[in-house]
Structure formats: structure tokens, C-alpha cells
Length: 345
Image (cartoon, rainbow, N blue to C red; front, side):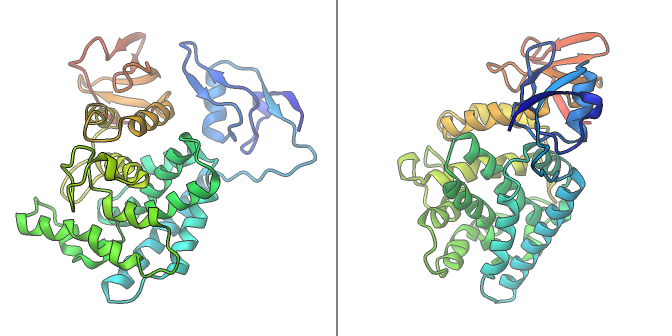
């Protein structure tokens, strides 16, 4: 496949870029080999690029996914998860055919990072949280696996582990999962059993991967032994459980849940950075935050001052405190710790 220059105005969704695009402040906006969508083409135009290097696919066919197509597939996947959990709640066995259908759909999107992040950021409703959460965690696990340079087979197994991590919630009463207020001690103890329930459900699958089982069982365990159900520590935790726990925390905290409103990703980054020493696996947490934060460059945000600004640079040493441009003023949040990003706009 040869590389050619092409006018940005002539680029269409599905074009594969052959160079990395930086903004004026040195931040990566589009990585080499990315499949462009409408959003990215607009961003490149806004940066003033006239021509860019692309891969010439004259003799090949590239099918653009399209954000709307991705969202439609995402909704279908979430509905399948809803069906899976409903079947379990009425006493049926785990429908492995449906599980495979969802995991195949997710893994087919492995190169569509921008669409994945847009879907995770936009398609969140509190009443459907349990179902979209399973899809989101699976998608995030897939990205983490890629960023950790896992081979395809290992990423596929991790996708399944992320998808099934909360399958035991099919045994928990829905009114408990969707309770709008704080859980009582006894209610929380019941919800905590979902890891055990999930393990018992999935272990019945012939030839199930041990990593999937341990990911389901241990994704609420923590490095210092403060988690559940067994309170085991770092060296006893499976790698998949460590990855799922990070994806689980990130998606839960950035989602609207029945009992709690979402936090901004940057507040979550700050909390995760603190927890990466002793509570979460430091290496995996750093890999996750360093990579996922880049997808928020160019996003508009609301600050705790009430101002609306654009994220223009993320300092690798201060990921949770980026530089935000408000009108013609640049605010370095790492210098002014009193200002926080409240939400994405």
C-alpha cells in the first residue's frame, strides 16, 4: 500500500492517515494509521492542514464504520447483554451463543478507538447502566489489552472476561441494583455476592479460560487486600482481574448511576492516579490513563469557575490537570489546583 498526499477537503470517513497530526502545543490529535471519521477530519481542518499523508487504497476496499453505525451496533450489544442477564434472573442457563455474538461484535471494533470513546462518553443512561456498563468495560478492556501489546487471542479472551465480569448481577434483584439511595449494609453484602454468583455461572461453560473465571471472581479485589470477596493481595490477583477493575472503576465513576451522578474523566484520572500506588496496579493504571487521556484533547469542558474551555494539551506528568484554553487565556490546571474540570460539553 503506497502513501500519497491528499487534500483534507477531499478526505472522507474511512481514509487511513499515514502520519501523526500534532496541534500547535505538541499534543497528538490523530495518530498514524488511524481511520478517519467526520469528527477527526473537522479537527484536522481546524488545525489549518491543507494536505495530509494517507494510504492509497485505490485497489483495495476500506469499509468505514461510521459513528452512527457504531452506535447502532453498541445499542444492539447492550440489548443482548440485557437479554442475557434477564435469562439468568429467571433461572435460565447462560446463553453462550449470545455472549459470543456480543464479544465478536466488540472485537471487530478493535481499531476504532475514536468511535469507542465517543460511544462510551455519550451513550449513558442511568436506567440502562447495568447493561451498557458490561459493554463499556469490555470495550475498555480491549483498549487496555491493545495498549499493553497483548496478542489478538489474549485481547479476545480479555474482551470476554470484561463482558462477563458482572454476569452474576443477573442473580441480584433489579430493584436492588437500581436503588436510587445508599444501600444498607445487608443490601451491600448481597450485591457483593455477584462475583461469586458470576463465577458459579461461568464455570459451567466447557473449556472456559481460567483468566475469565478469575477476572469475574476477583475484579473487586485490590492490590492491598482491601477488596472483596476474599481480600487477597496483588501477587494473588490475575492480570485480567486487575485490568477489569480499572475499566470497571473508570466507567462506573464517569457514568450516571441510579444513586450517583457521573464525575468528569479528569477527576477520575486524579483519583486513579492516587489509587495506583497500593490500591490499583500502578503499571496498568498508568498505561490506561496515559493512553485514554489523549482522546479528550480538543474536547470542550466546563470548569469549576463556570467558564467553558477547550482542552489543548495534556502534560504526561500531570494528566489529570491539562491546559485549557478559555477564550484567549490559557489555564494550566497543574499550576492552579483550585480549578477543576466539572464535565465534558
